[in-house]
Amino acid sequence: MSTGRLTIDLDAVVANWRALDGMTNCKTAAVVKANGYGLGAPNVAKALFKAGVRQFFVAVAEEAVEIREELGQKPEISIFSGHMKGDTDLIRELNLTPMLNSVEQMTQHFETLPGHPFGIQLDTGMNRLGMEPQEWAAVAELVLSQNPTLVMSHLACADEPDHPMNPHQLDVFKQLTDGINVPRSLAATGGILLGPEYHFDLTRPGIGLYGGHPFEHATQAIELDLPVIQVRDLSEGEVVGYGNSWQADRPSKIATVSGGYADGIFRLLSDKATLYHGDIPCKLVGRVSMDLLTIDITGLPDIPTKLTLIGPKQSVDDLAKQANTIGYEVLTQLGARYNRKTYGK
Ligand SMILES: *Cc1c(COP(=O)(O)O)cnc(C)c1O
Image (cartoon, rainbow, N blue to C red; front, top):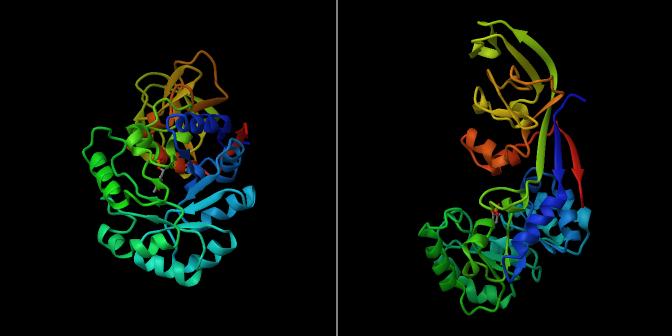
C-alpha cells in the first residue's frame, strides 16, 4: 500500500461536539455536509448519533442519502439549500427537512408535500441564501400557520469576533423573529464562540467538530502520513522535480513520498510546506506533482518510512495558512486515494 494514510479520530469529533455543546444552554446539531468536511459523513454521523446528536444538517438533499441509510429514521436531517424542483422525491422518501429559502421554494414545498416538515432560512445580510426581510414580511403569517420546525439565518463574519456585522445580523435576526413561537438558530461554530446572545434554541457547528479554526481549543481529529517510496543522495548543484525549481546548495538526501495535488495537497505548497519525522521538520523542495512530493531529509538521523503532513506538529489550519487558504478547504479536499483508518465511535 503506497498511498498516504489518513487517520480519522471519531472520539475527537465527539469530544469537540461535547465541548461546543457545553458552551451553550440550547440544543446542538451537527453539520455533516461535504462528506462530513471530508472525514466521511456516515462514520461521523454514526459516532455523533451515539453521543446523542439528533439533528444533522447537509447542504443538498443527495448528501442525506447515506446518513439516512446509516442512522435510520430517528434523527432529523435538514437541508440548507431547501426544496429545489428535483428534490421532492428524496425529501419525501427520506423524510428530510428542507430549510426553505424563498417564496418560490415555499410554494414548491406546500404544493408538492403539504404537511411535510420544513424550516425557513432568512437572509440577515450575507446575501447568499434565505428569504429577504420584505419577502418574509409578506409570507410570515402563512408560513407560521404551517408550523415550521426552525427559523434560521447564517452569520457572514462570525470568525471575526469584533466585526460589526455580527451585532448587525443579530439585530436583524431578532427584528425578523422576536415573538414567534418557533425554535430559532443563528450560530455555526463561530457564532457559538460569540456568546450566549447568539445561541437561541439550536446551534449548527461544522468546522469546530472537525478540529478547525475558529474553535482554537478543538481536539485535532485527523493525521495524514505519507509513505516514503524512494530516497536518493544528491550532489551540490543537482536539481529536483518539474521545472527544476529547487537546486541543492550542498550534498543532500531527498525522499520521494506518495501524495500530490490529486490528493488535495495544493500545488501552491511547492517549495513551501514542511513535513515532520516525529518532531523534526523537513522541507518540501521542488514542485508538488500529481502523485508525489520531494522532501529534503538531509538533517535526519535515520531514513524514515513515512513523513507526517498533518499531525501533532502541524494542524489542518497551520497547513491551510501556508497554502493561503482555510482549514475548511484543506479538509474537504482530502484525497479519495488515501488509505483511511477510522478510529473510535
Ligand atoms: C456550513 C454551514 C454551517 C457550519 O458552519 P461552520 O463554520 O463549519 O461551523 C452552519 N450553517 C450554515 C448555513 C452553513 O452553510
